Length: 221
Length: 246
Length: 47
Image 1 (cartoon, helix red, strand yellow):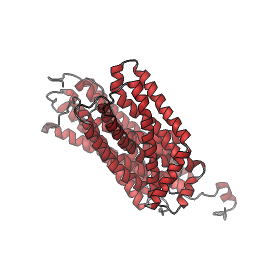
Image 2 (tube, each protein chain N blue to C red):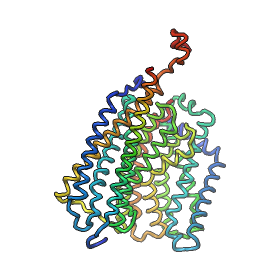
Image 3 (tube, one colour):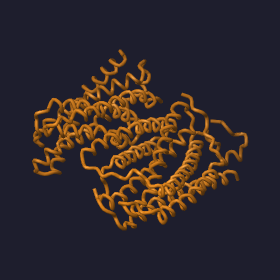
Image 4 (cartoon, rainbow over the protein chains, first blue to last red):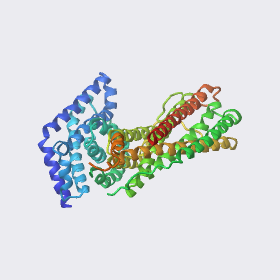
């Protein structure tokens, strides 16, 4: 457990030190939201309906940047070998990084909310539940994303490989998160968002253990 | 993590494969002939329903081949034997081919029956996601040069993608149930079972033949990649006692 | 949901069968060519 805490502290510290890059990624996500709104045009009803979907598309694209960034220290400064020499097991290393990534993605999502509210004019009544969906959805992106980022960081074509592997995998997360978010941003009069949250919970329940188990084989030399 | 020394491709593999493929061609010819010209047209869908005689066998075989891929992935991670990686490579490639065909056939079937090329049907949509996921694994194999890393990573990616398939299916089914869905008839009349079964075995044997051939090619390539370098032929000719010096 | 009976549509049937068997044949052919290339390499190395 102490290994996990140490790993988490290390990755949080690294993220804090590269907070300028993190801010840039949020700006990238906000730009994506802006461009997507142009694709729809000045149609208030359509924008409101599509807000949930676009939020998650922007977040997904931004996540590939953030996840790749999380292994930057390891690849550029040959930290991967250093990681392996540490008396810490790969499982702790994985969860430390995955948790740090989760926090970072969560903050990015919250950073996109003001932009979303301004551009897409959604219903604001269920904002807290929306944050809950952000919590679950970003967790679903973080676990497999950290595993695949660990792989991609070690090969040449990393920028293509990470999205190529991650996107098909997280289709259930996208479906559920978009559905729940759209419902919540339109008021969700019939309370259907909860069942989609359950699906996100199930996905996380499967993938957080599975990815942790497999991470060791991915970073071995 | 020790890995066994060299893969040993079976020299009779091409022969076995040819036999399987020959049998499959005969079966598919017979099954398709019966299905196209002798089976009765279906009540609602008429002759278009005959697509089922290739579509359903392709579906069964695609799923089976991807299960084989999953088993090979786990087997490689546990046993560290190269033959599992060769079979993994083969089954992912053949599985992706069949899954792509499944999407194409499903789309062609959808147009006259539902009026649209794509309907977000849970099975077809899951198949499409499956295609992309396993194409990603194939791309991963292209980008990684070290054989051990390539084998380990593609095994990991295969396990993760395979675990995702039921989740994708359930989420799409749920997501789609909120909209109007078109259903495909589930019951098959007895006169239609025969060509279906014949074609099912046909596609199965064909896929098996492809797997044997493709894994044979993969094993040969692995043997080439992993074998110690041979001395240059000219040097060996001039100095027959060379060998091994580095 | 389309009610009633669909008539015709044979072009879709031919398209489905044709594409399927063509793709399988092309894949099988490519495998056969590669195997034959390997066999030729083996013979050259033996000489």
